Length: 512
Image (cartoon, rainbow, N blue to C red):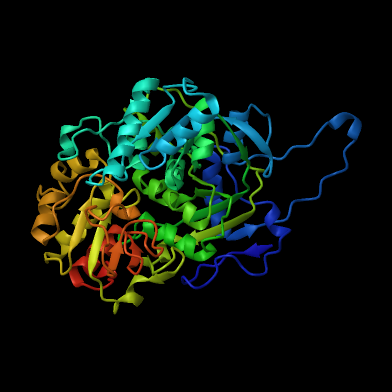
């Protein structure tokens, strides 16, 4: 039997003596919230995995096939493929509940759909397709603008129910249907539901796994096929389980948790695997923080990330959807490829240094890194709670930023929250007021153009080889624009603290 250890970022959380056979059966799994509680009680034993007990000999004439339990991901895909049981490696045709595409991949997907199914073909279900322009929106680039026109023409032709259109590019507030970044908008508009299959033509579609949903990114060819049939052939991934326990320190955010995990297993550590997150720390996270956790599983190569649905999930969905849904939970005897355990109470603020999300370092160890700018936004750092966190740091410091600090809300709803919701402990001030007092740029139109490195006139794009602390999710060369730019990935706490000093800064300098 192997025991986990709690260690510094450079130390493995899985004891090296763990054998491959040991990792065949996990000692911890859940089939309901009650079993999650059992898992928490077992956590103190720090048992990472155990060997399966010997099975007594069975009589083949009477027992039939022997089946093991299933993980959450396996259960969702079994239901979607109308199979009683699935195992990792099985290839199955699944029925898709929601297909999302946007202005970058939509035109190509529509072209494939028309080519393969006919110019006059109709989509399989106009109410299960969600189309969100969000990437290359606020630009004078005619080709980028044409992409949105193609979305509009297709949606009119197919009578797509959920098309979040934008026509007035000069004033996003004049477009009530425009939402903003697709991954956050999907949740806010009620398209993320436990137990369902959501596919999207964007690698960060995995964000929706926060709702106990199987959500993953697909290519244009697959999307074209789904548009015509509502089905897709998928291989069932094995599951890695991440158990996070301990009280979350008030200087940490979910971004620190996922940077810790990616640094632990590497950018290839979860290649075509499901990443399941459980434990008392995960249960304490809001839905927005859970979305941050699942958003970056693809940065570890993951097929999908998933969090068991609970009361937090149900409360979030109360006023967002009337579609019935049925959550699933991993069985007690479900098989996990590997299980990792973390004591979050001992974790420190982290960053991912250029040029890889797994180039993990403690924020305090990078204090001598001089920066040129800070970016707070995107699907993983531009939600309402992210801006509240940044405002908390600015408020606590009472200082002005020392480098240009760009703020880009993920959606129109987040933009409204930034200007209307009071920040706790501020005496009624909103985020926008605190940002203005700190000398930040005025919050911009919701989009994810800068995160991706869109057209050159995109607001906050990195057009010069500068050093940027960013709440985005990727720091590969050229990711935010200039191929020689250097991006340090960080939480909104760390990003705000860095803006105040002009160096990569541990937020505890202002929060303690």
